Image 1 (spheres, protein in one colour):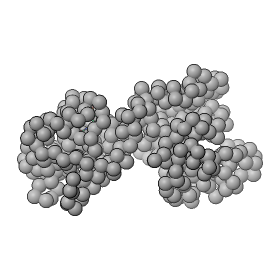
Image 2 (cartoon, protein in one colour):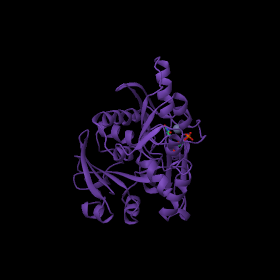
Image 3 (cartoon, helix red, strand yellow):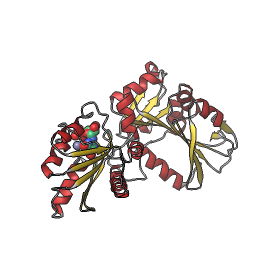
Image 4 (tube, helix red, strand yellow):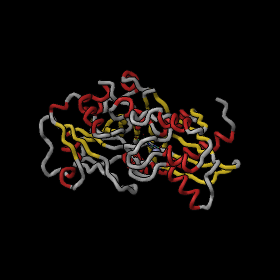
Length: 338
Ligand code: AOF
Ligand code: ZN
């Protein structure tokens, strides 16, 4: 397909506006839409939060509220318009009703209730449809949704912080944080993009963590999951008493694949593993990690607890080093399954 620089510009904008829903739409994908007439954007919309309008419908409303007619417009949408009655009525009908003459789609919708039908219905109604513009970019943006549609399990993201020698903790002192405030902000921003956060019972016993999102504004908290085969979670653990949901998984879930299936059934599309070396090691050794954020702190522990994570172990778990970022004072290496 030949795409003009104008096409690329408008779809890039649709991808940009979709970002406004980040952390709020799961288990739906991030979706953006712009309406273009005479070479100019007349309206924009995005899927803002779960239960809110779909991107196309918000864009059509936006045009109306600005006094523009959508009749004869071209719609650039990052996801194939839906053709089903879900939490909202079908976007295909909204586009037809609005008189849109052409729809340009970045990525098809792999949701079985929608698959392929959205584009077909629009074409049957005489609307021109082209698909595939910035498809890779859209796939990256909605990766957890696409992953879950395909596997019915969550994408697994690990976060682990290590000191200058690769240690995760200091036996010398009470458990405490050893990364910067700015780094912690980034961790909370990552948490809100995940539907669930998992740790092993060791971490609960030693740190008694909250595992909530506190440093970024949010209306929902990720589900918390503790792997606890021998029922060692203290009854007074914060996570069991703060009013937010926590699942304690017993020995029947020592097979992690079964646990991932269960979370997939609960529409958990992205799981963050924040556990210690044992929990993280099990996920790695079973080849279940899709992304690994390895945070390098500048601190040196007195009595180190080895993470046992190095390039060789990550590589044998099927991961490749894809980027290096700065999170406050820390250097973060991202490893992903390609
Ligand atoms: C669109 N535009 O902005 C989004 C779509 O149950 P619902 O109504 O929330 O629909 C959810 C499904 O619709 C979701 O799984 C995905 O297939 C599609 N999302 N479709 O046309 C949008 N967010
Ligand atoms: Zn829709």
